[in-house]
Image (tube, rainbow, N blue to C red; front, side, top):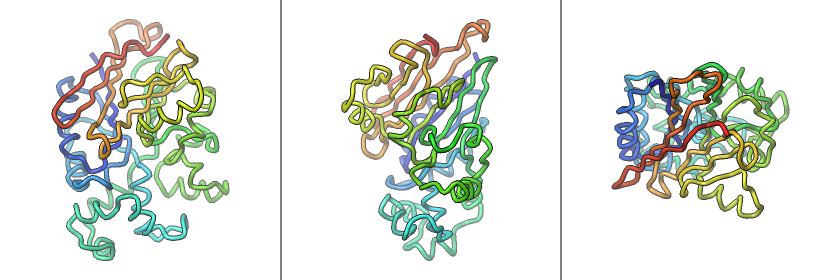
Length: 290
């Protein structure tokens, strides 16, 4: 059975990543998409990147806002008054130490080229059509009302994104690498025809935000996943799979499975795996459609 997996924000937690990949690889996945935020906060950013670069199954690696902060700091980007300070405040020091650098300037001058290539070539988003009529849009933080999906799919790397934002006079918060409330409060018509899979906002944080209003279209699976439907009982339109790794000690992935039926009438099923320090939690999430 064909299956396609997506893995949320890792943040240097190599033990969680190893456990999750061990569980996912048993399904013999056709493709794995990593949603970004491989680095910062947790202690093993380098080991996380090494594991991903060594994968033997087809993978796509997206950029997260933490990789963007790192590159902005390295390149002294115009975004932010002090991009180096912004990165440090968000966990950058842990990344420096994991790569064996005592400070920022040795990191800047001595970072190995293979890692720079990895970070600079991370994709902005990934559109997957696993079977007819099914479109999955993987993106770090979701979809931004300020950037149409058609434009988002044309942006290949972070330099494309930076130039686009300059041209359109957009703020950093307008980017689909940073979107939060502007995405959650938007109508699903904004990305009609796509199932959006994203990370960036821990499900627990999203749950607290949703408690401000009655939102039956959002359904939470413990504090690991947030599933949004088109209305309370409609088809799934987005899934947040950020389980808060460094905060909660948990990491999640979801798999989209073809069920062997006519893909034009059967939208497939979804499963998830969450790993914690000492347990693995598989879940059957049911059909994607209503």
